Length: 221
Image (cartoon, rainbow, N blue to C red; front, side):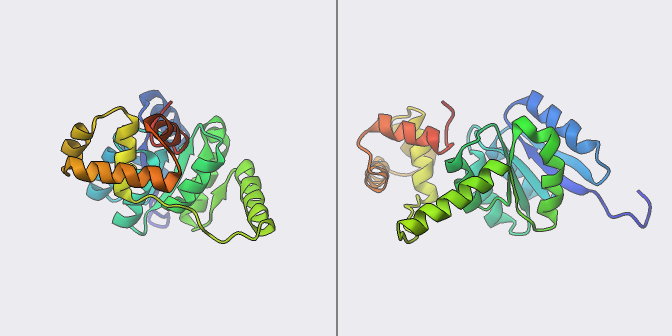
């Protein structure tokens, strides 16, 4: 790098599959203005690395252990408001896409076309421009038109961070006692969160909560 060239964009890459990380890193590191400086195998590790290192951009998988990419995005957005975040996922799924935007991501890239789109998405993110794959643009327009046609107001039920943590652990099959121990809360509080989840989501039992958690990207099917 000569004195007149800007420093490369410092990238944190998080995916729980080492082969995927290797492939993505090859795509990014061959570009002179992009440099992967940290790799994480799950969302919690990604947050810890972002806290410890100077990074400009985080590229996160949606479905990861401990913290999902969506949960990590919320934590990173709160921890480092200036950090740009891209979701890199195999899920061509409107629900994941909308949740990623709500969490604070500025772009959504499909793994199936990462070799084509990821570099452009990284550069767009650093220009403070959103990057959406074509299907996502269609979803946004359809979502807007459907709501306008139905005269809807913004009324999405949003789970709190703690409710999402409880939901993820319930869906993974943990007992109330195990959840209480993991989150350092009382069993009674776990039961209250679970009741709130069922009420907010209009669901009736653990199976339905698990299905919702899979659709929301909190756990893998």
